[in-house]
Figure 1 (cartoon, rainbow, N blue to C red):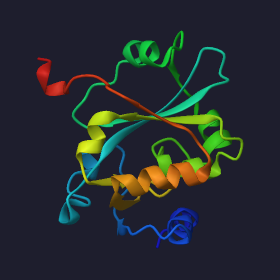
Figure 2: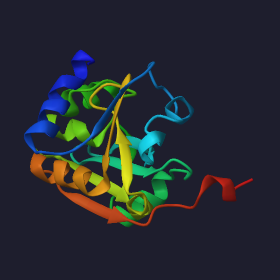
Figure 3: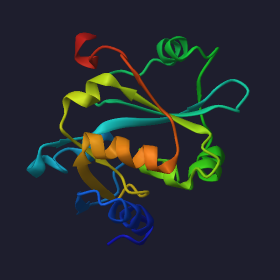
Figure 4: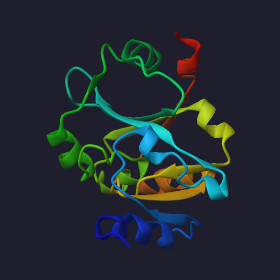
Length: 171
């Protein structure tokens, strides 16, 4: 097991959440994740770490892999003046992970609960979902409701939104 993944795996075990664990090469793109978890019907989603203009409100935004992320659309739906991508320093300070390893499972490291998980409602169509367990060279697949249970056990809030259109609609 990847050393960086151990705390997330321990938290999943502590919560009694059933998961499937996969080790793989470092995943830097959605294409790198293709096929991982397919044996249990799990789907991957995009993970975006963003903040408001004042850098006081933080968001992990998860959207389906086939959708395009538009900051203006999500900002408006959240009622935030302008979202921007967080720096690597913010990511490490707030969630304890490095760039490329953004995951809802990192909310276990957000002791001040200052990060809101924003979930694209279309993700709820997939019974099984995949997340990196604090490192992008491993993946866990679990039931979508167990992911929500994990986040709530961490003490963070969740907001469900209709986000974007499938990227294939744009040509």
